[in-house]
Length: 81
Image (cartoon, rainbow, N blue to C red; front, side, top):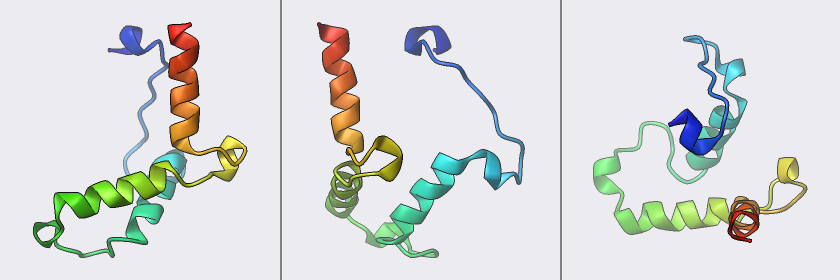
């Protein structure tokens, strides 16, 4: 898989949240919509899709105020060219 993605792979140590900045930040963004302790049995697939769309189209400071969607598809276009 690593070779297919052409990416380095790192594993965080257990209970070391500071080693997972992006993951922890994303969890915080998701928690704005689904509070901790929410039962996902009561959350529809459409609701999850709506939140995913909002987060993927939300500008991020770490991406120079581009959206994850813009950055991902710009890279895909570069690969296709």
